[in-house]
Length: 281
Image 1: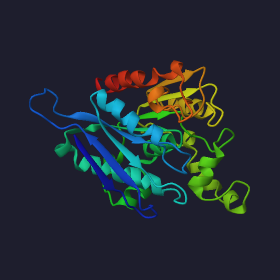
Image 2 (image 1 turned 30 degrees about the vertical axis):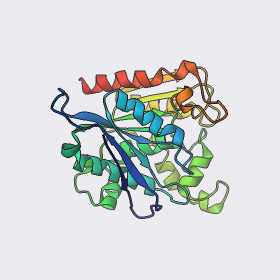
Image 3 (image 1 turned 135 degrees about the vertical axis):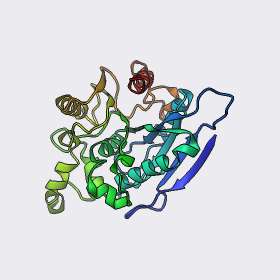
Image 4 (image 1 turned 60 degrees about the vertical axis):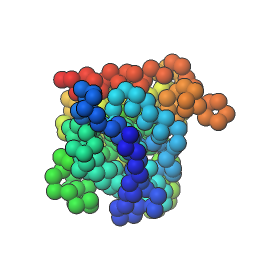
């Protein structure tokens, strides 16, 4: 396995921003030449990146036969668009090395949980915008486009059902302050259900009905917007389970034994089936 850590630095990055790769080594003893890659963005409300939504999940994707990479992106006090620039830089890095790493350059999926879902989806919405390409020195916007998105209980809307803490960290100011009030245009831009277009990649989403931290309306609003734009989408809403479940089993349980929800453990196999289906078309 090619397991390496790459420092990712853009304007505003924190010193520890990095991409960790889990690249299965090529061998001519196997029929497989190139593999899809899943690029993971752990959650954490843009205040941190969760360990529970990182390596344990990456290893599950590895076991499915994919390459994986984890972006430990800059969080508060870093503000928008720093983390997005880091994700775009990571996408470019992977595509630049696709031949050497035996990665299918047109089969790269961004995956994210909670605020990491917001980050992953942001790349899906903004990949073709000039501010992103110019910010990292890319001429061909297509180098930044994900080929699919897997969003787990994602933060999406800055409106009525917003997870306020995520947006306060993303913008670097607290709700109720004049600084926050002056960010109306940016708040509108990062409310991702309003940014969906026909260019948005195919999407897999799951959420729980009982999520009290990031209400399921975040996913419902996104699904509705994707539907209106004709973007192929698979959505699963589980009736039980709180926020931040990760794999929802013992492998990603919290230290006190929480975040286990047997009903939700099926999501990763459903995502596996979805990946195989979109790349089999």
